[in-house]
Length: 314
Length: 314
Image (cartoon, rainbow over all chains, first blue to last red; front, side, top):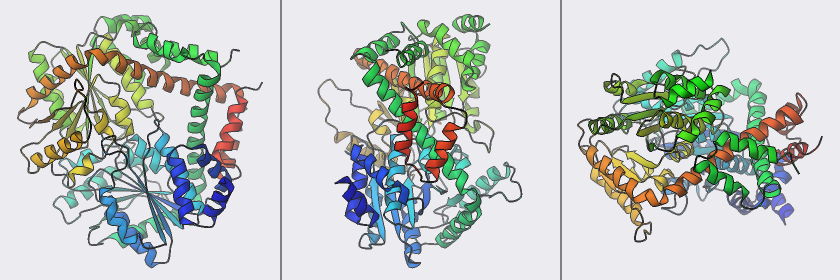
């Protein structure tokens, strides 16, 4: 059945793609089997990561970007990553509804993803969902995520190009740049550029960029002003992405290799801990040592040493 | 030498505390030795996590909270977590300067932390820094972090109480609540409450809370309006924290146990992967398999299986 699902995904069947992503989201072993089956047929799609703080207008921007690509006959998939909240019972789809303008268009596949998993689980699920869309023949895959933290950095590392969307007028502009994600942005977008403070924000980003020494031939991230609601500046964003793609072609191997490495390390770590827990420790043994750490009888590093030792004993 | 450092930390020597946190930040093995040495003497400090999106005024709020605690004669430590940016060469301290009002006060120890580590590294380093401040005799430790993503969730899980700071007028209020972090907030603060939209934001948070079924005796997070720049509402925040502390006393064991468990799992995962790499694989072997994944010769799950098998062979 999974092989049939894989075949249907490879044939571009949208319902099969939706089903496959659900398996991945649910952490179903069949999702992993599917990735194994289709992986050799992937690597063709260009992955575009779009991130930024809440309220930066990312969904509207992505909507406009899709309109541009569709005009050029390019097929697209979108993965909109939402952290799960128990208050809402899943992904909050609010502004994603705007993208419904493409819902009737077979050339655009849009999917919200949430996860209830461990740290790192969301990045892995997102990477797997991108593999599925790639396998289904999409020319580009947009990964849209809210926020500017470490997990977004991990998710954006899944992409071939990273677009960081900022917005003027959230009080302190420098705060928006604090987030470590600056280092992996290939293109900066200052959206809602008709608002007061847009030029100040552009200057602030440029000032930050100017602290970095770019060698000749290095890519210096451009800073582009947009008003996504009207579409102003969106073609310039697409141009910047295309220029980055040409520029990065030489380094794409390195980027994909480091992506493969961090993915592999994550999966190996998960499996080793699971093996330890299921095959080396007695039931309740982990719990007992956790209790000793919680009561300060033993420190976490010494406890970890003891657990790691168990991996190598009978 | 490390034992001397541990003794000095336990004696409350501020320079020793600063040195110890630097060791942790640099991922120096001496930092781990120090944690081992002082761990049994910790667990007394009350840890307050303060998070929220950029521009929410967290630093000003923390500054005011410190003023309240100092008035009550309570000693405090602050860990301000900043992701590292290569553009700035470390933590961006901008608004942290405001806290300099306490710089001359021996009762308040303030430290910015950054990390250049792996996923999860920042949460571990923050937890270790909190252990150091706890060991040094601080009554409360405030952990302030920017953002609303998975890593902030991990960091905030380090704390005994979590304060989520929101701010009106960042466009779409619901966006601010999208972040999964709502589920771990024990106290909501709507800061800059003199701004337009404050009441709407309070209602929006309350509406979200009302979707959740609270049983009798459950803690229902209060939503408190503040204007941190003037200090308005800050005593109410401190009251809410004190009430939560009383309320949670019964469950504090559970919380500390789940904290101990996630820390322990993280350290064990790191060590197992390091062992595999250093003792089971030949030099270049990981790289070779990463290259095969990057070139789509092998999928990451099959590659992970192969690597995990190596753990159990000669």
